[in-house]
Amino acid sequence: MAAYVALLRGIAPTNPNMRNEKLRKTFESLGFTHVETVIASGNVLFETRSKNIKKLELDIEKTLLKQLGFTSTTIIRSKEEIASLIKKNPFKGLVHGPSSSLNITFLKSASRKKVAFPYHAPGYRVLGSYDRALASVVDLTGAKTPDLMRWMEKGFGKEITTRTWKTVERLHKKLAEY
Image (cartoon, rainbow, N blue to C red; front, side, top):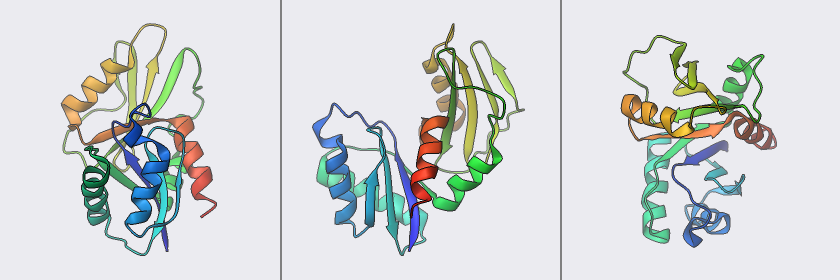
């Protein structure tokens, strides 16, 4: 069995159909095992025999629409891919806290956009690209995260989703139990 995390874009826990218990049941209906949600922002861990990521993503997206009535871009990363990202530690020496947010933006597909890293803009920096993921730091004392998100969508499209580094570390810890 292979362990994965499905990173769902645009999950709002206030929507009753996007709550963790419904997400878990939906994933279980697809035959996945060891289904677990991590915080209420669209992180679903699961195991399956399939290694066809594109098919898994498509099946999840179709099932979310059919069973729960919403569309959500689904980006899947394997246990090994998350472990590799953690090992690379793109934020070495930086701190996530009240004045700065350390973020990872996951891309569904490899990017064709050429960006010289680090990329600096008022209020944020994009440190680099790490296997279909971008590491960024937002200065919370002046900039707003939506500035970075607009830049990301403009350059990389809408099939992306962002998590804090703390969330990625938490996902890694949980996946290590699989």
